[in-house]
Image 1 (cartoon, rainbow, N blue to C red):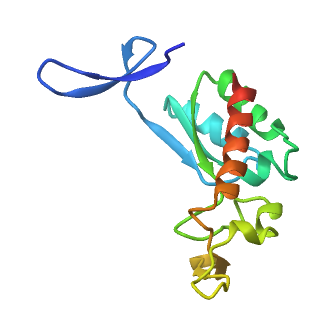
Image 2: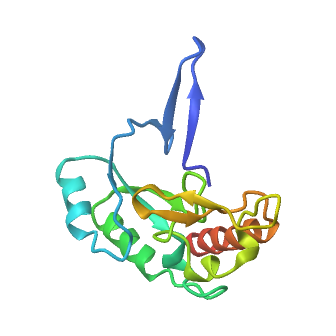
Length: 162
């Protein structure tokens, strides 16, 4: 089912269309993880008459143990959005953030698996600047194992949302 699309006019201008109508994308975004209570943020978004609430979905929230999924936090956010007639914009927070693994986002089991981490030419693990997190392991952007693990999580999420 098509929910939204970008439409190009005859003059070459583009606009977002949702449910067959032009849609002005106005959003309130939260950086808090889904385990926080979003009630006041979603209520505030509705009170301000913004049509979209955007939140970061942390991989660690939905797959705390490899292959074991828990979508309860996501379901709570969806229920609140439905209650207030809001659309959701979900921002995936997975294994990498600015070239490093972020302990806030990726599950602990990812950090404990060295095959997901970048190594230098001598085979040493690479440490990246985690900014406010301090030194963090660098995720290997070419790791097929990491790609497959994260892909499995996003597919499970999409299947759950279907």
